[in-house]
Length: 305
Image 1 (spheres, rainbow, N blue to C red):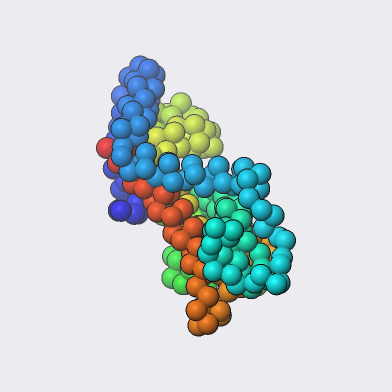
Image 2: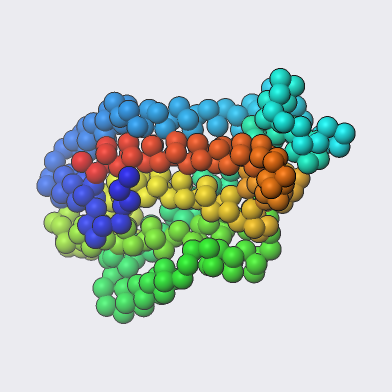
């Protein structure tokens, strides 16, 4: 999968150059372009496959507790039982049903990852619009700050923020949002640098439109393609980071049936041959990330044409 981060995203250039404001086209043409991209999505095999995988986990998050055992009930007498007809994924070291904890654990990640990615996208888009539109001191200062943040390893930055705020679900959302906002801002900035030179932006300036209107009313609608692609790509990374921080103890806390927490609680028992409490939540993380990445591939193909 190609990650969006090139200096001039193709999707942004195409949408910008075909914008009604840029060439005086009828507004219906913009709606037709959107319908064409949605039609491409519906025909994309990767998008369909990814939607099925993600849709399965969404259903588990919503209805899981109605069809499985209580994931918090422990039964010390039946701890670390191998997968069987009674316990499809076995039991963990406290005798809790691993299948129930995996199914219901989808809820936590499908709350944290999307909210964190939305936060990162909003912050990154705002930064990208400002740094791409304003040249000179504003761009230089903000761009250097963003580059300094990007120079630090993601996991180190995540740990520093998590330690400062304390372990919780809210901390996890804020941490991931702050981690990915600078990355998204660079993609948006590259698209805005192209758009700001087009005729429709010059026309808005000649009309003495206010800067916020030019940024959010004129340029933003024409850089939605790279923003949408960035959102879907970063969503997959957010799932990994959320699981990683929870594994390290800086995210969601036990006994919540979070996938990262489940791995953290049981990685020490693998040496004793008890592999199932770690394998199944790990597979859950992997399948969800694969599903999101397949959706991202379909979105990239449709919006970067």
